[in-house]
Image 1 (spheres, rainbow, N blue to C red):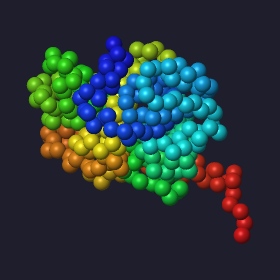
Image 2: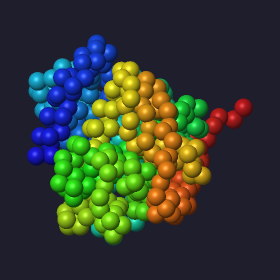
Image 3: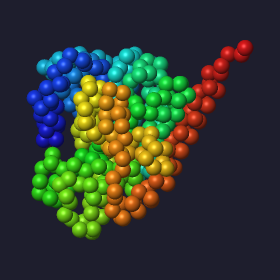
Image 4: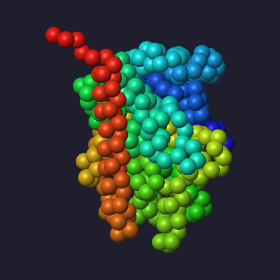
Length: 351
């Protein structure tokens, strides 16, 4: 049902927004397209308009998946790229690169352990983007997002092509979950729920702002506390339910497709496109922070100001800021270490 809802959402976009029928189309590259998130994400994106080329990359052979998707009765072509040496060709001239590669979180795994496994993904993809598509938007699904995005930013800086308006950590799943859980509690459609989720994309850094919920949320403080905790630990809920066989994949693909669609709509020039994402930010003392953003032709069009929050929410922000700051530092340090090691392997020529 989730996948069908996503397909229906994307297939009806042209009816809801006629501007989508404009001729401008884009190349979108998905890194990690053969995985548990990458495959359903590719299908959801293939079912929507606006993509002239969907480039699928993974370390494993991608020809079969690409051929399968190429039979879907939609405009545009699907190309496949396999192996680390084909990463640059995969993202070459892309307008948008979406990264879903990496190891899923396993039961009991801490975020720093996950970073040790997935940090190289950020470094390698950011390096490839620097060479092959320096003006592309770059959006990471790969966890831990709180560390991955700062790591990628550091690589882009070293390569001289860093534009903070073009780098995103996709936190849409936190918003999707909030909409669903609130909708179920209020006995209304999640489609009618709007709520910003700020901070980061792990544990207590995930902060749904119930004070800003539309329609107004009528649960008491105890309900808000319980629901906030569930939203923060929803990833763990899925990991436990899958009994060590994976993490959130289908719901993440749904959320990722929603965010990608918003990015493409912004690139096409539609106004008023607002999504939450984890980005370089000056809204708080944290160098990276998730908040509502208006998207446009160059990525981030503007940062929406943080709203007036409840006292409980203000206290939660005060607690999460040091965590997000430390996560960012860890990501940057990881990238610097990787770059230093690569320089040792490939020293510059002597004068």
